[in-house]
Image (cartoon, one colour):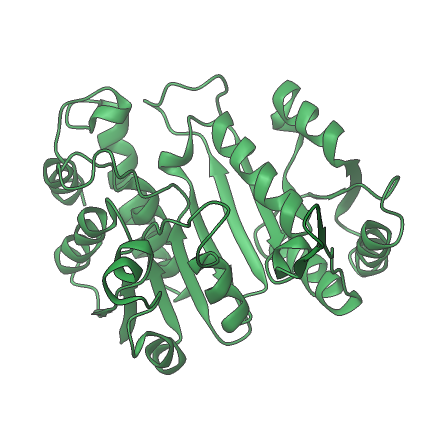
Length: 330
């Protein structure tokens, strides 16, 4: 099969090469078709996407994306947001798991953040009212809310999860978050075997820090999900081990969550783990569970041993050396 590979900005090219090398080492039937996107490509061409990228995703249905930089305050909107809206990948799925060998404050964390991916404040409906007032619209629809809540319950059911927690601020935003919460309750009625929980966003942040082990599957509108998913990554050591899948009815785009790290780009010392774990998510969705497990197990062993790891997790290995160590344990 063919799939689109988008290296992105900064360290993206280096960590994408790790995916290519491991694909070959595992003899996987995947041919990567590479396209450029992001700030670096835009600086050279004035275009955010390389011509043909959108058509390639339409044709092949599957894509894996490295980190892309987004200008703050000015310039083009996020590549991630643009792709999610273009291909209606309505569910952002981020598994949060502890890794032995990673310095973190918690052990045995295993939860999943499921975030609505297409609307809310990220719809980008904002404008200036005169020179001194900026106005943004928080768009929440019944259709999107029901769809993401059903996805969360179906995910829990399919993966043996026991509880789904809705994150909201319906005590203040009674119409927008109120609608989301109403949809959560209505959809939840179809899943009597799964425990339901509702937690206000600010309390949710505190509870995740105090007792993260009490949570299982989390579901939220776009903005809350974006914030809480990074908080969850902090529970297990940071974004270096945080994969993400953007799931639609027809298209799927997997990605590393972390940034492009321009300060170390080109030095060959980047940690490719998040992108490799995103690749493992992709393999699972393709029905290649055994191969996904092989990759995760090999990566976990290398990290736990701590002998050949990158600098961000206490070692001195290059990206290539770390990747080869994983290959040697496949």
